[in-house]
Length: 268
Length: 268
Image (cartoon, rainbow over all chains, first blue to last red; front, top):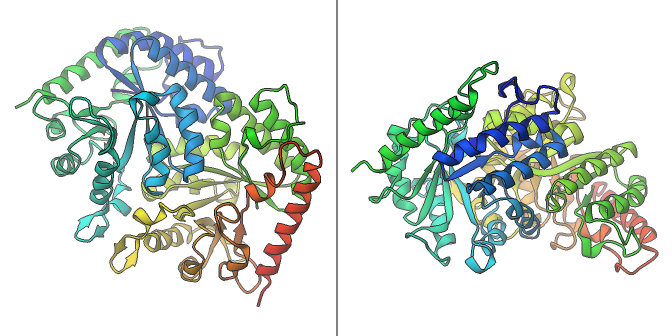
């Protein structure tokens, strides 16, 4: 999975140099997405980097998501929403219009997630959610490590994610209720994989944040399924803004990343 | 504080009947905001009810926030964001452009909040944040009640909120790092007020969710300060869509709500 976190100062200088931020972002991905689609099944745009340009940025998000889907890429919207039930219904309606899956905060509990789960049934659209369990940042320790009845809070959240997914259809043994587990904590992967036997694990934090693909074998099952490794900056910012061969560089970086992921997934 | 949670089926039928959802929402608040400004210092638009109309809805949010500020209302954006540090910077930049304050999730810890705190210093704009501590929904119990070292998780979060605000300037004894505490849990207010001595408490959940203004005295200090009671549906949906006197009804409901809040704030 490739993360799409557009930063103006990291866009190629020769992409629509006179355009607005939103226009430049759309133009960049219009060229890059076909290359990503050669190597990855899925992209993860983080909506924060679009929202920071206001409603123009929000429209750019919608355009980028639609373009990605036109190229056969699944779109996992990294939106990290979480609100009370009636509000969660509005979020689910809006975000499942342009995304195939979204990330969610757990702090408000089951009734904040349920409106999204309704969309996960195949007759309602077959969408998916990824609940934050163990995040990739240093501050993950502040609350997620707190001991609750002899285990860390993130393990309690992991068990809840397993429960929340248990009544939904499975495909290849996996439910549409996945979990976000930072690739920056490889020593916790085996334990969380066990607590989340039917959850796809979304693993962010490879590259700039310090996570290494080679350390993530425990996230995959014996068939090489069950995990989605994400990299953002290492692929989409693998060039200097002044470079003119940036499209080939992105293509090569995505190819290398896919090769590394496949090697780890298929490790015995 | 009045919550702005626009729902199409609850808008007055005579407001721009042929308009798009986003146009109708803006037209509704254009008429209603001057009335709210007579009685309340602050509005709390929940961005979910705008985002569900996509980028048009997002633009409507920006317009409504700007109109509210033109009428002298503070805008507390109920956006409930929360992401790792570098992403939080992008959220802070975007959302503090149109909001005076925002709500935040605590699950990712201090480094997910820090980029927002930078904007809370007066020389950087004097913004404010409200961290979710004890939410108003039934699912609040799922994780916020978990026992951590002999106290519920929400108390641990409350202590963190106090720490996060301690190095920032105070006004009237309060820091710009506030806390969301649901008005639906009045029996917890006195304890949380004590754990959060310098935090403004944002109290949602009055009215449709079952909270009662009369039960919230413990949230205020002896001067009648320290708490912001929010009501959304009870004011902004206090009429049938076919009513033609809806503006007067909103005015009256906001007046009554303000009177109830002031009575409780000033109770001995």
